[in-house]
Length: 281
Image (cartoon, rainbow, N blue to C red):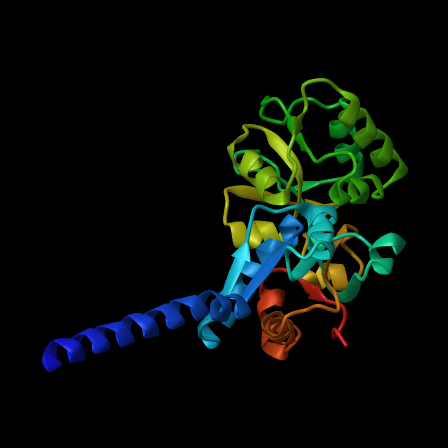
């Protein structure tokens, strides 16, 4: 009888311990989970950073859903559904008033890219204007040019329009034409370009380097997009990659940002095609 009672008590004790452990586990795991979203270019840069940090910090995990874009990520951050937003556009006064805190980080070239089979290595601004305006419709090999656009309100569209007055007019014309291919995010645009015969579009260099898709990066007016040419001003198209947080930044997310702004984090981001422009302090 005593043996049976002892076994019963031991079993009850083990069950109780199990319940306590599993009840506490989600909260413990939640404290080491970092939720991130933002622009496609920024999220591509984050991949090697998250991999390196995950190896060095046991127990830390990341939740990264499909890219929301800069505006969508800021909304999610202010709503408390993510911890860190990565953006490629300035914060609005309203977003700052709601608690958004911008931390400058760097820039990546906005590269002009085509599918691998397009027989071109360099393109001039004038040639780009003619393509987007519809004046030039064929590549040198006779293949039809297929432009992959971004939405009119997207930062990539804004940057392209700022290349020249002629480019602003050409992109506007392209946006108004019927039947154009429009990709919402950087990863989606790169995926479409890699599969579209004769395709041309724009992409943050981080997405090209990290995504490893079959893309052909063009020199613009003879200058290749790179950290060096962005730094010396010879390459004209730059896309910002900055971070936004709030005063409710969890400890795990704060430590991860410290890593990103460290020398090791800078080195990883630079390898991914980012020109560091701030120390984050």
